[in-house]
Image (cartoon, rainbow, N blue to C red):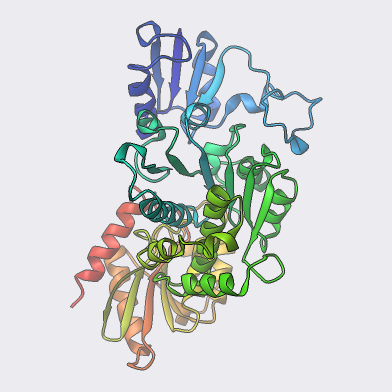
Length: 468
C-alpha cells in the first residue's frame, strides 16, 4: 500500500510516525510505503504524481484538491444532513486527513468547537468544567474507571498522538479550524458554533468557502445530536438553522431558555466569577455550559445548574485563568495596565478585545501580515471610541495609517519600539482613578515579523515586563 503525506509540519510528522507503527485499515505497517511531499504550492499538486498512491493525507494548510474535481453535480450538498460522503467520488487515490481519521477512529464521544475566534477559550472552559465534574462525580471510583478529558486540535499535540490514549469512557473536546473541517463529513455528538466572521480569505476561495468549511460542524447531525450556536451572528444563525440537531442558542436569555429562578441565579454567579475580561468571554462561558449540559444532561442546563454538580461547575470557572495571549493581563505600571491579545490575527478578535476595554482610554498595538481583511480591521480600529492612539507595526502598518489623522497613530520599527511608544502615549492619559490600557491585539497574522503568534506574544510579554 502506498500512502502520501502532503505537508511536513507537526501534523505531517505525526501522521508519518503513527503509520510506521499502526495499520491503515487492515494493512499492517510493514506493508505501508510512506512518501512525504513538502514545499509545494496548490498549483503544483497535479505534478506530484499522486495518482500512484492509494491514500493521501493532507495537512491542514493543504487545500483538499479533489474537492473541485470530483464533485457530484447531481447531489445537493448544501442541504445534505445525511452524514455520508457520497457526493465525493472517492476514486484512487483516496484523500483524507489526520482530523478525518481521528473522527472515524476515536472510541469516545467528541465535542467539536469551531468559529472564527474564541475556539481555544471555549474549548478550554468545556474541558475544565468536565474535569471538575468528573473529579466530583467519580471521586470514589477506581482510577481505571475515572474518565479522562482530552483537549485536542489546535491545542497541544497533533490529534493522532492522542489516539492510543483514549478509552471509550473518556471525553474529547476538539478545537477545530476551518482547515480541519474543510473536508470533514463525520459527525460529533456535540457541536459548538461560535460567531463566524471573515478570516483566512488568503487561503479559502472567498467567504462562502470559509463558511461552508465551518458549517461541517453542524451539517451532518441528526436530532439526537446537539448544536450550541451563537444566535446573534447572522452567518452562524443561518448555518444552525439548516442543521437537524437539537439546538441550544446563546447568549442565554429568558426567551430562549427554560431556566428556573435558581438556575438563573446560579448562571449569573458562574458568569460573574470569570476572571478574564470582556462580554465575549461571558458568551464563551455560556457556550461552554450549554456544551457540557448537552454532553452530560441531554441539553438540560437548568437541571445541571440545579444539581449536586453545581459546586464543581462554579469551581471550574472560578479557577479558569484564560489562555496565554488571549486578553491576558500582564502587569500595571504608572496607572497603565498591559494586556497581551497576540492570538488575535483577524478582525473579530480585535473587535471583541477593544469592546472589552471600551470604558478605558486604550492604546492599541496593531498590524502584521495581511489575511485579506485589511480595510475592515482598519475601520474597526479607528472607529473605536476608547482609542487614544494606535501604534502600527508590520507589513500592513502603512496601509493602516494611510488617510488617518496623524494624532491617532504612530508607526513603530519593531516590537520594542512599539511597546515604548505605547507606554508613552498611555501614561499621558492615565490617572489613578482611571487607568489607561495598553492592548496588543494585532488583528493580523504574525508571519511578516515572527514565527507565529506564540513568539509574538512571548516577545511582547518580555518587552512589557522589562519596563521600569
